[in-house]
Length: 446
Image 1 (cartoon, rainbow, N blue to C red):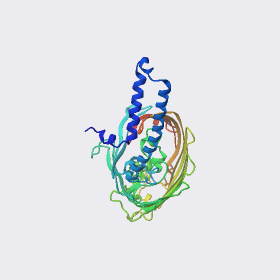
Image 2: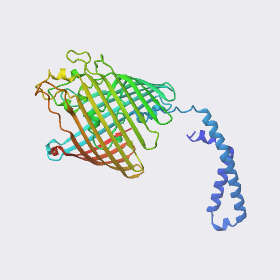
Image 3: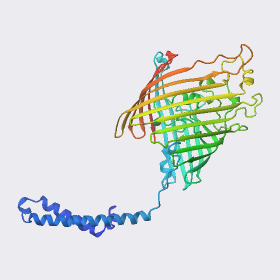
Protein backbone atom coordinates (compact mmCIF):
# COMPACT_ATOMS: atom_id res chain seq x y z
CA UNK A 1 0.00 0.00 0.00
CA UNK A 2 1.40 3.42 -0.90
CA UNK A 3 2.03 6.16 1.67
CA UNK A 4 -0.78 8.23 0.14
CA UNK A 5 -3.48 5.55 0.63
CA UNK A 6 -4.49 6.45 4.23
CA UNK A 7 -5.06 10.07 3.27
CA UNK A 8 -7.12 9.19 0.17
CA UNK A 9 -9.38 6.85 2.12
CA UNK A 10 -10.14 9.72 4.54
CA UNK A 11 -11.20 12.06 1.71
CA UNK A 12 -14.98 12.74 1.73
CA UNK A 13 -16.97 11.01 -1.09
CA UNK A 14 -18.13 14.39 -2.38
CA UNK A 15 -14.49 15.41 -2.89
CA UNK A 16 -13.90 12.26 -4.99
CA UNK A 17 -16.89 13.05 -7.21
CA UNK A 18 -15.77 16.63 -7.76
CA UNK A 19 -12.27 15.46 -8.72
CA UNK A 20 -13.71 13.00 -11.21
CA UNK A 21 -15.93 15.64 -12.86
CA UNK A 22 -13.15 18.19 -12.98
CA UNK A 23 -10.78 15.71 -14.62
CA UNK A 24 -13.49 14.78 -17.14
CA UNK A 25 -14.09 18.42 -18.10
CA UNK A 26 -10.38 19.04 -18.44
CA UNK A 27 -10.09 16.03 -20.72
CA UNK A 28 -13.00 17.14 -22.90
CA UNK A 29 -11.56 20.64 -23.20
CA UNK A 30 -8.24 19.22 -24.40
CA UNK A 31 -9.81 17.29 -27.28
CA UNK A 32 -9.85 18.46 -30.84
CA UNK A 33 -12.48 21.14 -31.70
CA UNK A 34 -14.57 18.60 -33.66
CA UNK A 35 -15.06 16.56 -30.50
CA UNK A 36 -15.77 19.56 -28.33
CA UNK A 37 -18.51 20.66 -30.73
CA UNK A 38 -20.48 17.59 -29.70
CA UNK A 39 -21.35 19.38 -26.49
CA UNK A 40 -22.97 22.75 -26.72
CA UNK A 41 -21.63 25.76 -24.88
CA UNK A 42 -24.72 25.75 -22.71
CA UNK A 43 -24.15 22.15 -21.64
CA UNK A 44 -20.56 22.90 -20.68
CA UNK A 45 -21.63 25.93 -18.66
CA UNK A 46 -24.25 23.85 -16.89
CA UNK A 47 -21.68 21.24 -15.95
CA UNK A 48 -19.26 23.89 -14.73
CA UNK A 49 -21.99 25.46 -12.62
CA UNK A 50 -22.71 22.07 -11.07
CA UNK A 51 -19.03 21.59 -10.25
CA UNK A 52 -18.88 25.04 -8.65
CA UNK A 53 -21.86 24.26 -6.44
CA UNK A 54 -20.31 20.98 -5.35
CA UNK A 55 -17.02 22.74 -4.57
CA UNK A 56 -18.85 25.08 -2.21
CA UNK A 57 -20.35 22.07 -0.44
CA UNK A 58 -16.89 20.50 -0.33
CA UNK A 59 -15.44 23.58 1.41
CA UNK A 60 -18.00 23.30 4.17
CA UNK A 61 -17.38 19.57 4.57
CA UNK A 62 -13.59 20.06 4.70
CA UNK A 63 -13.99 22.79 7.33
CA UNK A 64 -15.92 20.36 9.53
CA UNK A 65 -13.23 17.71 8.97
CA UNK A 66 -10.47 20.14 10.04
CA UNK A 67 -12.38 21.06 13.18
CA UNK A 68 -12.75 17.38 14.08
CA UNK A 69 -9.03 16.76 13.53
CA UNK A 70 -8.05 19.82 15.58
CA UNK A 71 -10.20 18.63 18.48
CA UNK A 72 -8.23 15.39 18.57
CA UNK A 73 -4.82 17.15 18.77
CA UNK A 74 -3.45 18.55 22.09
CA UNK A 75 -3.28 22.30 22.32
CA UNK A 76 0.16 23.72 21.61
CA UNK A 77 2.05 25.02 24.60
CA UNK A 78 2.27 28.80 24.86
CA UNK A 79 5.83 30.21 24.50
CA UNK A 80 7.53 31.44 27.63
CA UNK A 81 7.10 35.16 28.13
CA UNK A 82 10.85 35.73 28.34
CA UNK A 83 11.52 34.41 24.85
CA UNK A 84 12.25 37.85 23.44
CA UNK A 85 14.85 38.81 26.00
CA UNK A 86 16.97 35.81 26.90
CA UNK A 87 19.83 34.96 24.66
CA UNK A 88 18.86 31.29 24.24
CA UNK A 89 15.11 31.50 24.22
CA UNK A 90 14.81 32.37 20.56
CA UNK A 91 16.91 29.28 19.80
CA UNK A 92 14.83 26.85 21.83
CA UNK A 93 11.47 27.41 20.24
CA UNK A 94 11.31 23.70 19.65
CA UNK A 95 11.41 23.14 23.40
CA UNK A 96 8.11 25.00 23.57
CA UNK A 97 6.48 22.48 21.25
CA UNK A 98 5.37 18.95 21.99
CA UNK A 99 8.97 17.64 21.70
CA UNK A 100 10.54 17.84 25.18
CA UNK A 101 14.18 17.81 24.01
CA UNK A 102 15.69 20.53 21.82
CA UNK A 103 19.12 21.53 20.52
CA UNK A 104 20.34 24.98 19.53
CA UNK A 105 23.54 26.93 19.16
CA UNK A 106 25.51 29.78 17.65
CA UNK A 107 29.06 30.62 16.65
CA UNK A 108 31.29 33.24 15.08
CA UNK A 109 34.50 33.39 13.08
CA UNK A 110 36.43 36.61 12.53
CA UNK A 111 39.40 38.12 10.77
CA UNK A 112 41.04 41.29 12.12
CA UNK A 113 43.78 43.32 10.40
CA UNK A 114 45.32 46.39 12.09
CA UNK A 115 45.83 49.25 9.68
CA UNK A 116 49.45 50.00 10.58
CA UNK A 117 50.70 46.68 11.90
CA UNK A 118 49.79 43.84 9.57
CA UNK A 119 51.97 41.44 11.60
CA UNK A 120 49.24 41.44 14.28
CA UNK A 121 46.55 40.23 11.87
CA UNK A 122 44.53 37.38 13.37
CA UNK A 123 41.88 34.88 12.30
CA UNK A 124 39.88 33.16 14.98
CA UNK A 125 37.00 30.80 15.68
CA UNK A 126 35.94 33.07 18.50
CA UNK A 127 33.01 31.03 19.78
CA UNK A 128 31.38 27.67 19.21
CA UNK A 129 28.29 27.18 21.36
CA UNK A 130 25.91 24.24 21.64
CA UNK A 131 22.83 24.25 23.81
CA UNK A 132 20.35 21.71 25.07
CA UNK A 133 16.86 22.43 26.35
CA UNK A 134 14.44 20.03 27.97
CA UNK A 135 10.80 20.59 28.87
CA UNK A 136 9.68 18.53 31.83
CA UNK A 137 6.05 19.67 31.62
CA UNK A 138 3.97 22.65 30.50
CA UNK A 139 5.47 24.88 33.20
CA UNK A 140 8.99 23.58 33.83
CA UNK A 141 12.01 23.56 31.53
CA UNK A 142 15.80 23.26 31.61
CA UNK A 143 18.17 25.45 29.55
CA UNK A 144 21.91 24.92 29.11
CA UNK A 145 24.77 26.17 26.93
CA UNK A 146 28.32 24.86 26.57
CA UNK A 147 30.81 27.22 24.92
CA UNK A 148 34.25 26.70 23.42
CA UNK A 149 36.25 29.88 22.81
CA UNK A 150 39.16 30.18 20.36
CA UNK A 151 38.86 26.68 18.91
CA UNK A 152 41.32 24.81 21.16
CA UNK A 153 41.37 24.67 24.96
CA UNK A 154 44.45 23.31 26.73
CA UNK A 155 47.21 24.50 29.03
CA UNK A 156 49.19 25.69 25.99
CA UNK A 157 46.32 27.22 23.99
CA UNK A 158 44.21 30.36 24.42
CA UNK A 159 40.85 28.62 24.29
CA UNK A 160 38.40 28.04 27.14
CA UNK A 161 35.53 25.63 27.68
CA UNK A 162 32.78 26.95 29.90
CA UNK A 163 29.17 26.41 30.84
CA UNK A 164 27.46 29.63 29.86
CA UNK A 165 24.02 28.77 31.21
CA UNK A 166 22.44 25.93 33.16
CA UNK A 167 19.18 26.68 34.92
CA UNK A 168 15.69 25.42 35.68
CA UNK A 169 12.81 27.77 34.88
CA UNK A 170 9.33 27.39 36.35
CA UNK A 171 6.21 29.22 35.16
CA UNK A 172 4.34 30.31 38.29
CA UNK A 173 1.49 32.10 36.51
CA UNK A 174 0.82 33.16 32.93
CA UNK A 175 3.02 36.25 33.47
CA UNK A 176 5.46 35.35 36.28
CA UNK A 177 8.48 33.05 36.01
CA UNK A 178 11.22 32.00 38.36
CA UNK A 179 14.54 30.30 37.67
CA UNK A 180 17.45 28.86 39.60
CA UNK A 181 20.93 27.94 38.46
CA UNK A 182 23.52 29.65 36.27
CA UNK A 183 21.88 32.36 34.18
CA UNK A 184 22.56 35.65 32.40
CA UNK A 185 22.16 38.89 34.33
CA UNK A 186 19.45 41.06 32.68
CA UNK A 187 21.58 44.14 32.08
CA UNK A 188 22.03 46.28 28.96
CA UNK A 189 21.08 45.50 25.39
CA UNK A 190 23.68 42.83 24.67
CA UNK A 191 24.16 40.53 27.65
CA UNK A 192 20.96 38.52 27.12
CA UNK A 193 21.05 38.91 23.33
CA UNK A 194 24.71 38.36 22.45
CA UNK A 195 24.46 35.97 19.49
CA UNK A 196 26.32 37.38 16.44
CA UNK A 197 23.10 37.69 14.43
CA UNK A 198 21.70 40.13 17.02
CA UNK A 199 24.27 42.92 17.08
CA UNK A 200 26.05 45.13 14.57
CA UNK A 201 29.76 44.78 13.96
CA UNK A 202 32.15 41.86 13.87
CA UNK A 203 32.93 42.15 17.59
CA UNK A 204 30.72 43.08 20.53
CA UNK A 205 30.85 46.76 21.43
CA UNK A 206 33.42 48.00 23.98
CA UNK A 207 31.02 49.48 26.53
CA UNK A 208 29.11 46.23 26.95
CA UNK A 209 32.28 44.19 27.30
CA UNK A 210 34.71 46.48 29.16
CA UNK A 211 32.17 48.10 31.55
CA UNK A 212 29.36 45.50 31.52
CA UNK A 213 31.31 42.22 31.34
CA UNK A 214 29.25 40.51 28.61
CA UNK A 215 28.70 37.59 28.54
CA UNK A 216 27.97 37.91 32.26
CA UNK A 217 26.29 35.15 34.20
CA UNK A 218 25.89 34.36 37.88
CA UNK A 219 24.48 31.55 39.95
CA UNK A 220 21.37 32.30 41.92
CA UNK A 221 17.60 32.60 42.00
CA UNK A 222 15.60 35.11 39.95
CA UNK A 223 12.00 36.05 39.29
CA UNK A 224 10.61 37.73 36.20
CA UNK A 225 7.23 39.27 35.50
CA UNK A 226 5.51 40.67 32.42
CA UNK A 227 2.51 42.97 32.25
CA UNK A 228 -0.06 43.43 29.52
CA UNK A 229 1.17 47.01 29.07
CA UNK A 230 4.60 45.81 27.88
CA UNK A 231 6.59 46.16 31.12
CA UNK A 232 9.03 43.40 32.08
CA UNK A 233 10.61 43.38 35.53
CA UNK A 234 13.40 41.19 36.91
CA UNK A 235 14.79 40.75 40.41
CA UNK A 236 17.07 38.23 42.02
CA UNK A 237 19.84 37.25 44.37
CA UNK A 238 23.07 35.78 43.02
CA UNK A 239 26.76 35.24 43.46
CA UNK A 240 28.93 38.27 42.82
CA UNK A 241 32.48 39.48 42.27
CA UNK A 242 35.66 38.60 44.16
CA UNK A 243 38.33 41.30 44.49
CA UNK A 244 40.91 38.77 45.66
CA UNK A 245 41.09 37.70 41.98
CA UNK A 246 42.47 41.13 41.00
CA UNK A 247 45.91 40.79 39.38
CA UNK A 248 47.73 44.09 39.78
CA UNK A 249 50.69 42.84 37.75
CA UNK A 250 48.69 42.43 34.51
CA UNK A 251 46.55 44.73 32.41
CA UNK A 252 43.47 42.49 32.63
CA UNK A 253 41.78 44.79 35.13
CA UNK A 254 42.44 47.77 32.88
CA UNK A 255 40.70 46.01 30.00
CA UNK A 256 37.59 45.20 32.08
CA UNK A 257 37.54 45.84 35.84
CA UNK A 258 34.58 43.55 36.54
CA UNK A 259 35.53 41.02 33.88
CA UNK A 260 38.80 40.42 35.72
CA UNK A 261 37.06 39.57 39.03
CA UNK A 262 34.10 37.67 37.59
CA UNK A 263 33.75 34.23 39.22
CA UNK A 264 31.60 32.45 36.59
CA UNK A 265 30.26 30.03 39.24
CA UNK A 266 33.56 28.12 39.22
CA UNK A 267 33.78 27.26 42.93
CA UNK A 268 32.71 30.86 43.47
CA UNK A 269 33.36 32.47 46.83
CA UNK A 270 29.85 33.23 48.09
CA UNK A 271 30.03 34.75 51.54
CA UNK A 272 28.86 38.03 50.01
CA UNK A 273 25.84 37.61 47.75
CA UNK A 274 24.50 40.27 45.38
CA UNK A 275 21.11 41.67 44.46
CA UNK A 276 19.96 42.82 41.03
CA UNK A 277 16.90 44.36 39.43
CA UNK A 278 15.87 45.44 35.95
CA UNK A 279 12.96 47.12 34.17
CA UNK A 280 12.28 47.02 30.42
CA UNK A 281 9.35 48.66 28.66
CA UNK A 282 8.29 47.56 25.15
CA UNK A 283 4.66 48.71 25.17
CA UNK A 284 5.16 50.99 22.15
CA UNK A 285 5.88 49.13 18.87
CA UNK A 286 9.54 49.51 17.89
CA UNK A 287 10.57 51.07 21.22
CA UNK A 288 12.50 49.60 24.15
CA UNK A 289 13.42 51.58 27.26
CA UNK A 290 15.19 50.00 30.20
CA UNK A 291 17.47 50.28 33.20
CA UNK A 292 19.11 47.87 35.63
CA UNK A 293 21.27 47.77 38.73
CA UNK A 294 23.52 45.14 40.33
CA UNK A 295 25.21 45.41 43.72
CA UNK A 296 26.90 43.30 46.35
CA UNK A 297 29.97 42.65 48.46
CA UNK A 298 33.25 41.90 46.71
CA UNK A 299 35.58 41.02 49.60
CA UNK A 300 34.03 37.54 50.10
CA UNK A 301 35.47 37.41 53.61
CA UNK A 302 39.05 37.35 52.35
CA UNK A 303 41.61 38.77 54.75
CA UNK A 304 42.81 42.25 53.83
CA UNK A 305 39.86 43.12 51.60
CA UNK A 306 37.71 44.87 54.19
CA UNK A 307 34.13 45.58 53.15
CA UNK A 308 34.64 46.13 49.43
CA UNK A 309 31.42 46.56 47.49
CA UNK A 310 30.51 46.63 43.77
CA UNK A 311 27.68 48.66 42.23
CA UNK A 312 26.96 48.66 38.50
CA UNK A 313 24.00 50.41 36.90
CA UNK A 314 22.95 51.26 33.37
CA UNK A 315 20.18 52.77 31.25
CA UNK A 316 19.42 51.98 27.62
CA UNK A 317 17.05 52.74 24.77
CA UNK A 318 16.38 51.30 21.35
CA UNK A 319 14.00 52.61 18.68
CA UNK A 320 13.35 50.94 15.32
CA UNK A 321 11.12 53.16 13.15
CA UNK A 322 10.72 51.61 9.71
CA UNK A 323 14.09 50.78 8.16
CA UNK A 324 16.03 52.62 10.88
CA UNK A 325 17.49 51.21 14.09
CA UNK A 326 18.73 53.59 16.81
CA UNK A 327 20.26 52.58 20.15
CA UNK A 328 21.97 54.26 23.10
CA UNK A 329 23.34 53.04 26.43
CA UNK A 330 25.13 54.46 29.47
CA UNK A 331 26.78 52.31 32.18
CA UNK A 332 28.60 53.26 35.38
CA UNK A 333 30.50 51.12 37.88
CA UNK A 334 31.65 51.96 41.41
CA UNK A 335 33.95 50.04 43.78
CA UNK A 336 34.17 50.95 47.46
CA UNK A 337 36.84 49.84 49.93
CA UNK A 338 39.61 50.02 47.33
CA UNK A 339 41.81 52.45 49.27
CA UNK A 340 42.85 49.85 51.84
CA UNK A 341 43.52 47.24 49.15
CA UNK A 342 45.47 49.56 46.84
CA UNK A 343 47.91 50.51 49.62
CA UNK A 344 49.14 46.92 49.49
CA UNK A 345 49.44 47.04 45.69
CA UNK A 346 51.49 50.22 45.30
CA UNK A 347 54.28 49.73 42.76
CA UNK A 348 52.23 47.46 40.50
CA UNK A 349 51.02 48.74 37.10
CA UNK A 350 47.27 48.16 37.60
CA UNK A 351 45.60 49.32 40.79
CA UNK A 352 41.87 48.95 41.43
CA UNK A 353 39.78 51.90 40.18
CA UNK A 354 37.02 53.48 42.21
CA UNK A 355 34.88 54.48 39.22
CA UNK A 356 34.54 53.44 35.58
CA UNK A 357 31.96 54.26 32.93
CA UNK A 358 31.01 54.04 29.27
CA UNK A 359 28.35 55.09 26.79
CA UNK A 360 27.55 54.74 23.11
CA UNK A 361 25.10 55.86 20.47
CA UNK A 362 24.40 53.80 17.37
CA UNK A 363 22.41 54.17 14.19
CA UNK A 364 21.65 51.58 11.52
CA UNK A 365 19.69 51.51 8.28
CA UNK A 366 18.27 48.50 6.43
CA UNK A 367 19.45 49.19 2.90
CA UNK A 368 17.33 46.37 1.50
CA UNK A 369 15.46 43.33 2.76
CA UNK A 370 14.57 40.88 0.02
CA UNK A 371 13.61 37.36 0.96
CA UNK A 372 16.49 35.78 2.85
CA UNK A 373 18.83 38.66 2.02
CA UNK A 374 19.11 41.63 4.35
CA UNK A 375 21.77 44.34 4.10
CA UNK A 376 22.13 46.77 7.01
CA UNK A 377 24.71 49.51 7.34
CA UNK A 378 25.57 51.05 10.73
CA UNK A 379 27.73 53.56 12.56
CA UNK A 380 28.53 53.62 16.29
CA UNK A 381 30.36 56.06 18.56
CA UNK A 382 31.64 54.89 21.95
CA UNK A 383 33.31 56.66 24.84
CA UNK A 384 34.47 54.71 27.88
CA UNK A 385 37.01 54.70 30.67
CA UNK A 386 37.91 51.66 32.78
CA UNK A 387 39.65 53.78 35.45
CA UNK A 388 38.08 57.24 35.55
CA UNK A 389 39.01 57.77 39.23
CA UNK A 390 40.90 56.14 42.12
CA UNK A 391 40.42 56.34 45.87
CA UNK A 392 42.89 58.79 47.45
CA UNK A 393 46.17 57.25 48.62
CA UNK A 394 48.98 58.92 50.58
CA UNK A 395 50.43 61.97 48.85
CA UNK A 396 51.94 61.24 45.48
CA UNK A 397 50.84 57.60 45.39
CA UNK A 398 47.36 57.88 43.88
CA UNK A 399 47.50 56.57 40.27
CA UNK A 400 46.70 58.90 37.40
CA UNK A 401 43.31 58.32 35.85
CA UNK A 402 43.19 56.77 32.41
CA UNK A 403 42.17 58.89 29.41
CA UNK A 404 38.72 58.30 27.91
CA UNK A 405 38.73 55.94 24.95
CA UNK A 406 36.77 57.24 21.94
CA UNK A 407 36.01 54.86 19.09
CA UNK A 408 34.06 55.15 15.84
CA UNK A 409 32.89 51.92 14.21
CA UNK A 410 31.18 51.70 10.83
CA UNK A 411 30.31 48.75 8.63
CA UNK A 412 27.52 46.45 7.57
CA UNK A 413 25.74 43.21 8.38
CA UNK A 414 24.61 41.11 5.42
CA UNK A 415 22.14 38.37 6.18
CA UNK A 416 22.29 35.63 3.55
CA UNK A 417 19.87 33.17 5.18
CA UNK A 418 17.76 33.05 8.33
CA UNK A 419 20.34 32.77 11.11
CA UNK A 420 23.46 33.44 8.99
CA UNK A 421 25.17 36.83 8.71
CA UNK A 422 28.32 38.17 7.04
CA UNK A 423 29.95 41.21 8.62
CA UNK A 424 32.56 43.84 7.83
CA UNK A 425 33.57 46.95 9.76
CA UNK A 426 36.30 49.52 10.29
CA UNK A 427 37.28 50.89 13.73
CA UNK A 428 38.78 54.34 14.14
CA UNK A 429 40.33 55.00 17.57
CA UNK A 430 40.38 58.76 18.02
CA UNK A 431 43.25 58.86 20.56
CA UNK A 432 45.25 55.86 19.40
CA UNK A 433 45.46 55.73 15.59
CA UNK A 434 47.81 52.73 15.70
CA UNK A 435 44.84 50.68 16.96
CA UNK A 436 42.70 51.36 13.86
CA UNK A 437 41.68 48.12 12.23
CA UNK A 438 39.55 46.38 9.61
CA UNK A 439 37.44 43.33 10.55
CA UNK A 440 35.57 40.61 8.69
CA UNK A 441 33.31 38.02 10.26
CA UNK A 442 30.64 35.39 9.82
CA UNK A 443 28.10 34.43 12.44
CA UNK A 444 25.30 31.92 12.73
CA UNK A 445 22.49 30.99 15.09
CA UNK A 446 20.07 28.09 15.02
